[in-house]
Image (cartoon, rainbow, N blue to C red; front, top):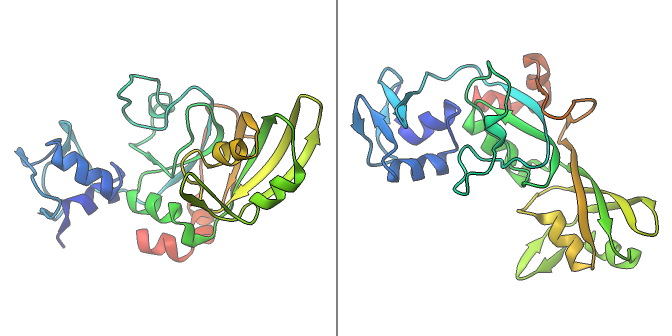
Length: 242
């Protein structure tokens, strides 16, 4: 059965469909030696499909890994500023994977990795209602009333941020530890929320993403989620990707 080249690339774990469209525009995708010019190009999986000259294999079973991202790494396959990336530091033996969402350069903690672009996109959707939970160290005077107001949602620089949950864990003279739970996870959302109430984020650690937990995973360590657990936790999402 034929499918669009962008969908094939996403299902093969190369990238998301949106990224595939950009790669096609850049002339980085070939089929049987010919450069693909449109995302509507159809393939059935028997062709010689290549990305930057590297042959793309047919879709493997849908898989998901938990990764403890350290600070100092960009969540990107290639960085225009030539900064170190997450994917350059993954253990040998992993297939080509993409991330579910991102963690910025100075953030650490749980990052989900998958070989299936369709799964990555599905898990990023706010409609799933999945909470992302973070441990956050902030500097500055903590105004509990203002933090409470953030929980109802807010608008910063014209961007609307959904309601969140903020708990004060420990409060000292120079710094405070918070637990923050989000359901959207917009770009640098926690840093912008904290800045809006006069706080600077000194450390940001993602503890969980939906039902998946960082737990005792060490920095730089990767652990695959067993297929049985994946099916139980993802339900219909997993069935669609399969």
